[in-house]
Image (cartoon, rainbow, N blue to C red; front, top):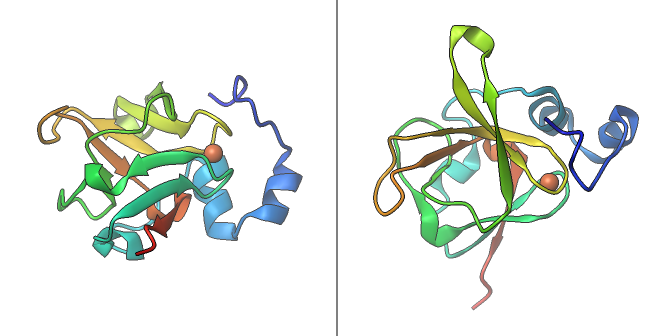
Length: 134
Ligand code: FE
């Protein structure tokens, strides 16, 4: 899933740059516990970036309250994410990763709101939030 990403680093390099929680999610396909991310409640205007490489992933205008326990968006920025089929845990899901560094972000489901009908269910630990300064 990550062999075509423009940014390629060894696990050792990633471990130096990321927190253990970030490393687990981004590089080991982990999932944070539902309801634990401070970004669930983030409602300010701003930009969500990849916690691994800083790539711009989601605008605050596409965030919505899905009730699933993870920060949810109905649309990613153009070309910012890639997907792959994930058949782990006895389910078939669509995995979402950062197009730039290949870091695992979460999954996307076809039960989101208009206009896209998509729910990008993201691990908050895989994101950083940059509020618009006013
Ligand atoms: Fe990234």
